[in-house]
Image (cartoon, rainbow, N blue to C red; front, side, top):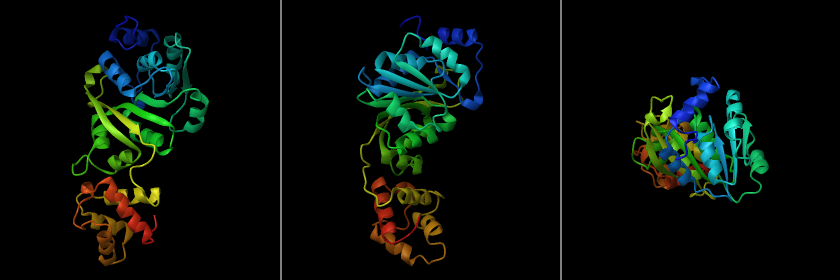
Length: 294
């Protein structure tokens, strides 16, 4: 381990103090100071010099530095203007790293990919995400159909478990289905709060989403599919029939609903968390073919 690694506690504190940097709670800033966790993140991303990496929220560049040593091109998007001079200084040895000042939720990512990653064979997102915007960022990355291989991110442990959950458990919900529609999630490791400055109040986890080239199921209408999924989970204690009746048949009796559920091969008494991704696809297609509107 080089004494100069940004991610060591000593170097992190020295950089922060020298630049007079103060953490903004509103931006969810927690800097990683553990070599082993960084190594696991990098390994999970499967990068080499022919590939590119997009980092979101580089902080003072601990992960950025490791990405620069592995990938042929690194682009880091940072929302906090105060960090730009720090990043310019610490990443000076890496000319193939570019820092973009902006909010990733507002950026045109397709345009950014075309501009930054035209000369690489594949791109992965690798990041220690601010926990308060984890889900919006991940769903933007997945929904926009970007040419991504993997998304390897540090997020809140509870959210990672929900993304990777299988049908039947309390963690399984609409987020699990959405993430698994677009990718194959795999928990890489659990991360204690002690490896950050400042320490967050929650446990974290590294998750790898291997982005699918095609969804694993065929749906007639994607927006309608997700509408059916969300409606099914509105009140978890209710049966799927009761949730779907409230959303799609508010003024009708149960007869038509139960007929469509039977057509989809789903018992009305089941709860939303027991249905697989495949069953939701069949259900939404039956509803869509019956002329129900989003």
